[in-house]
Image (cartoon, rainbow, N blue to C red; front, side):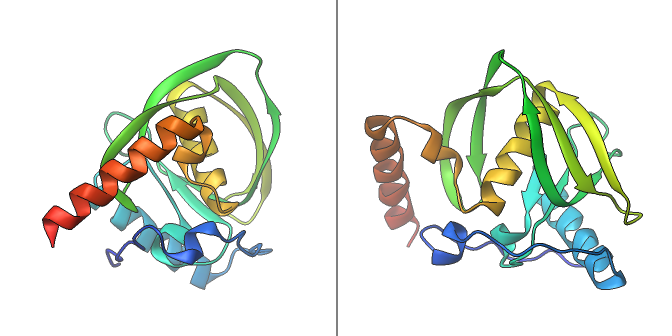
Length: 168
């Protein structure tokens, strides 16, 4: 198992809609294991393949308090979103040192291929729902800041660029 490096914004791969997996193989399971190692090392609660240069519809999420309930998703699809919204502070290791409050549906129903290779349908609420939506956005070439208004988005990207220059 390996902690993989993150692509750094504005890497063009972060804007790509990635390819479906189709079937869970030993290779896919190994990628998931690396993704979990990488996510826990961040530390974070979710990670999508494109964030580390894996251009497949793979994601991992673990919002449990003890970090012992990892969810592995291949080819996830949002089937239903609730009418109620929640707001959480979101960020990304692809764009360091900045975060923003993002409003998303509070509950979702998702279809995905699980670690056993079975297509399942499952409901999620709260932070689990938010993190899964965040990962699906990554699989579709979207970043969390795309959900902000244009002024807030530009302020966030300007601040990130300024902070990145200081690190060099």
